Amino acid sequence: MQLEELKLVAAGNLINLRTAAGLTQAELGAKLNYSDKSISKWERGEAIPDAYVLTQMAELFGVTVDYILSSHTSWEPTRTAEDPKQDVVYSTSVIIAIAVLGVWTLALTAFVALWLADMVRWKIFVAAFPVSVLTWMVLLCIFKRTHYLKYVVALFVLSLFGAFYLLFLNHNPWQIFLIAVLAEALVFLSFHVQKRPKKGTAAKMEKAGNEAESP
Image 1 (tube, helix red, strand yellow):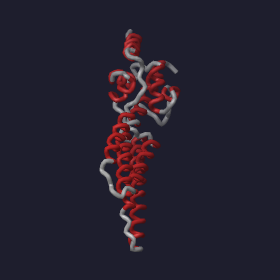
Image 2 (cartoon, one colour; image 1 turned 90 degrees about the vertical axis):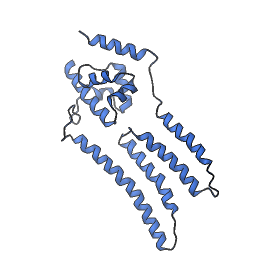
Image 3 (spheres, one colour; image 1 turned 180 degrees about the vertical axis):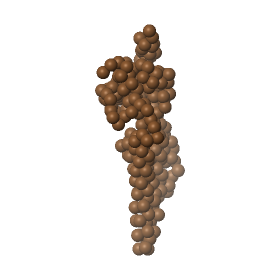
Image 4 (tube, one colour; image 1 turned 90 degrees about the horizontal axis):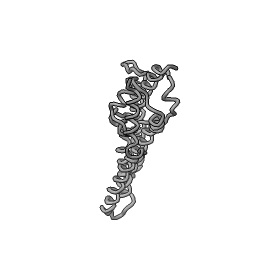
């Protein structure tokens, strides 16, 4: 494969991997410690990332370096209205909505059945809320739609504290939510943990790459 062709293949794969992950060029650049201008240059096929950056990308998107540098018939650089990838994204959202609605349908069915038997159990809905959020969170991970996963995880943690408060504590102490505040902070901080090269390394690598690309 010629260098120019390799650049275009890598550009197409990078565009599709980035958009599938729900990242902007600026967000991807921040994760790689590169500017959005560098990401744009790679996606236009004007340059190709070096081995270190390719390894970072492969780890970030859950693929191999060989995948990024190989041509795939289902991954095209140009997005059109007929792009099948758009249908997949739409179908994924529908699947998640159906799964979450299914949890609430089961909860309502159980509530009505018990109600008809003269047993009103409203706490079924309290338990259904964290279960539905957990279902949402798991499906987001399966479909690799992680751009707002941290908010769903935070909602799940909060729903667990709320359910515990309503279902199992006789006196319902509000102080339990002080722990929930710290738990929420831990969730958001954990999503900002990422590998970074040593200080100055990324800038030197980008400068060296720009010098190598200049005639």
